[in-house]
Amino acid sequence: MSTLIVAAQFTKNTGQPAQGLALADIDLYLTRLNNSTGVDTVVWNGTQHPTEEVDNCGTYMRRYTSADLSVFSYYVAAHYTGAVVLDTDYAMGAISEEATTFPAGAIEYTYTVTDSGTGLPIEGVEVWFATDLAGTNIVWKGDTDAFGIARDVHGSKPWLDAGTYYVWKQFAGYVDNDGPDIEVVS
Image (tube, rainbow, N blue to C red; front, side, top):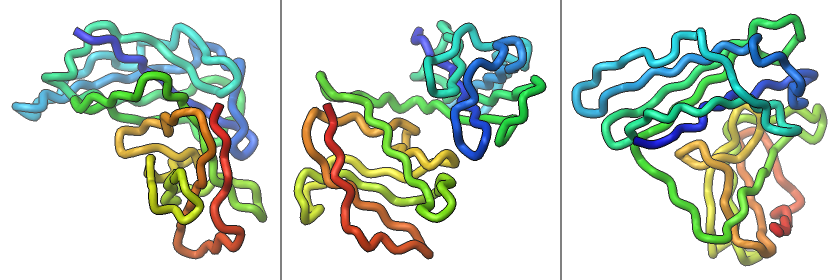
């Protein structure tokens, strides 16, 4: 058995982390899908709530200790029912049977893409990190989520060794005239 960290992130005021929400105001839903048979089973039906808030990022989590990633894929949803006005009241995600491993010493790095005119996050931007200015030695690639945060196909943020990276991005309808961003991971 494995332990899953079931988490939901909420924002308010056009993308700012919704910190300090009451845990009892967040309902968690967890469904598992048998990878062989295709049969899904409800694990949590909204009666479970997060047990803690992750500091400073509007993320709320609870551990599920009976996960079997070799047999099931897991689907997560969260619904906020409190009085605070949020950008959205729902958060959704999935955990597949495919395990993601990260190199020893790697650092989880958050890279966010926003519209320079409005400051709002942009979803669906293709992002890649390279170790060279030409962008030929690509070490990570992904797309931005609804919050403008770059994530890979498994939903993970970049895990990178300490160092300097050139970050390239591309999205239809937008022009990046400044070339790559230079990001220092430490």
